[in-house]
Amino acid sequence: MCQIAIYPGTFDPVTYGHIDLIKRAQEIFSEVIVAVAHNPHKKPLFTVEERVRLLEKAVSGLEGVRVEDFQGLVVDYARKLKSRVLIRGLRMLSDFEYEFQMALTNRKLSSQVETIFLMPHESYSYLSARLLKEAASLGADLSSFVPDFVEEALKKKLQKK
Picture (spheres, one colour):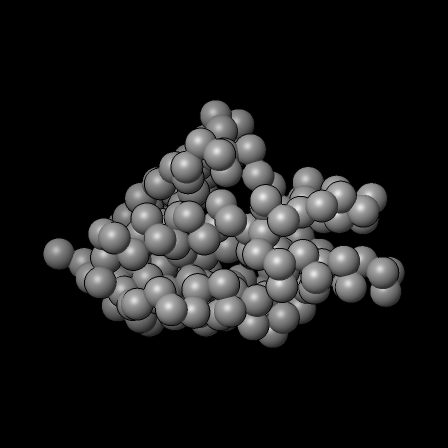
């Protein structure tokens, strides 16, 4: 049985939905590595270092969870860490097609790595970092979507733009 699971993503920024999935994965696996992707194609608002710091603060106190960043193919990263499991979140049906394509591509690239889909609590199923950034830029209260330190960092970052 695989003991290490990798939860890869951009996490720009980390939301309560991400934290919920991390906690769910933590219940199943002895170690969960939250892997922050260097993905310049997505044009993230936060730097990789900022995203790692926010995630580390968000998961502090969760046993068996660590945060790292990675570059390149996630299946290569998984092989390097001797993990056979990728965790992906499915919020809505609209996520399924993209996640399914990615899982099949990853399987073709490495048949030793499996993707396991987890669903967040229904109260987080509509959350998206993209929508939260837009709401924050318009001054919305994000306290029910992200931890207070993430909301503060997000609003500070958006003021600079």
